[in-house]
Image 1: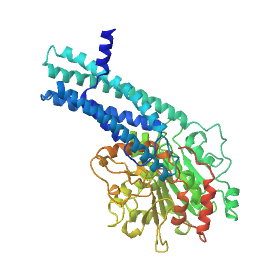
Image 2 (image 1 turned 180 degrees about the horizontal axis):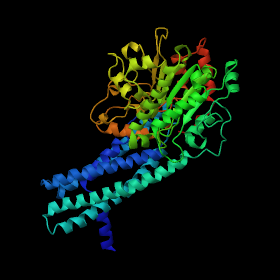
Image 3 (image 1 turned 30 degrees about the vertical axis):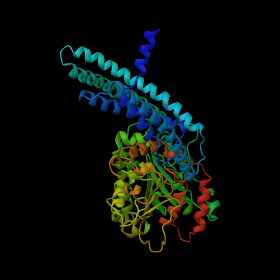
Length: 553
């Protein structure tokens, strides 16, 4: 029995530096960030952070040892005593601080407070997950030692240890990237392809001649994809619009082209089909034509589309096309340029046809996109002047930090204006707004109006690799709306915290994080209001649209 216990103690024993590193990064995971997290998710973040700290500490300890540094005897015992006491006291202090920071943040965004049970739950989840991941890591380390002993027959001991570790790391990398990752991607590919085909039997094809998949359409209902079918099925009817306006209304045109059931994506062909759809259904004869770039799976925000449709009495056409069946994050990672290519091709093809029309018969042309859709929609334009010349307005909601025009406008903002809500060239064409949008005196805003809707606590907008080593202006300036004053820049940690926040950005309440609620209604009412439109009309329309349930992305 004693040999078994001794072996177990050796297995559970952790290196001094690794323990210190795990403790430090565990504490770092509790520091304030932009959005609240559930105890389960915070537990996962804690476990990953502690494992990374453990690995970095182990590496540092190994480097110290090979350079001759080593704690033995009484100094070692004292060091362990100091680390143990510091870890215990520090963890209690950090958990108490976390509970205060988290509840303050929840107050800001309008969520219920949490009690002491939540930190206990996340500690349990974090500890279990950390032990499991550490066991896997130690298994790999043991394999490295076996390989190192074999290589040690031919090389010096230290070189053999390094070579053994590298061989195991290389084999693990090949297995993960070459086998596991490929199988994972194949599984995800099949899963999202199946999800893209959902909804086809739940709702029948439309009977309106103004909707894709309908009797006048050149695309089939099945080929629209799940988000395309959701978009078409949610189109308001002429009667619904008339009940709001108390005036005769038209059935709006909605043209959509999906990737099809075979998963093959030809963006140039899709763009041409989208223009043909518009022409068949009379989209170019409407008062307003909205060119929308969707998110990764083709999702189009109903609040954006319906705002214009209700405002203009249905005398509108909205066109979009699907460029992927993967969620936005996966779509961006797999092929980030596809969104830009899709946005550029769609707008350029629509614009080319629009320009051939007699000037007196051209609809007002606007462009829009949300999240990854805004990233793609921007790609058709070279700058503010190009937007003003070729459109009658634009709405970009929840831009990503990779948006080229957004990044340029923000970097070149007028001196003295904050990064979270900058002023660009005096607001002549481009303006930035929070939700609900506030633009000041609108009478001075002549010509095309371009609006960026963004939240100060949206990690999708503010996350960037540069956060690792560079303090952003938005953390040097007074904090934006509902950003906790406890949030401070910490090298590397802030980048990791905002990266973790992105996973919960869409779980925030409306008006927070990456959820914009009815803010697009207020934005369109400023960008392109119809004659006679009033502030009271905007408020009434926002309430009307807010009652409708937006589809899941």
